[in-house]
Length: 154
Image 1 (cartoon, rainbow, N blue to C red):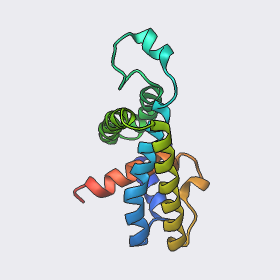
Image 2: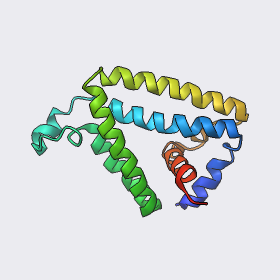
Image 3: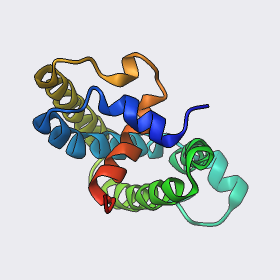
Image 4: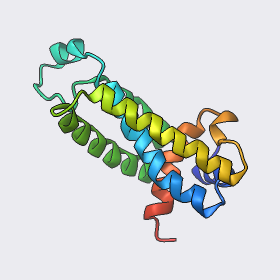
């Protein structure tokens, strides 16, 4: 298994152009956020009835999937897993409140489509294909790379 630094080094190869990087700093979190919203939109009565916590922010499919995703990050770095867990929690809360105002699934699809258009535009500028076309695990490396690049003290 590759280390987090090895993943970042490979991911960075197709993310050198400053414009592409800037687009990724916006679009990667937006895609992550929209996926959380889409997962929260799936009826989760079975989870709510099983847990009976009356806590809709955690009684949904997004929370379940995010717990599984965190296993991937924990295997790479406890520190990164904690950072992603905080971001995931923020996504859950904001998506919950958005869902109180507008249909969450529709909002999430809109964000998802716009963000992917941005991603492909950025890679067009870069002149290199997205990393996930080589390995789907890069779909999980992207959010960590953004966190690392935006919030590290390097």
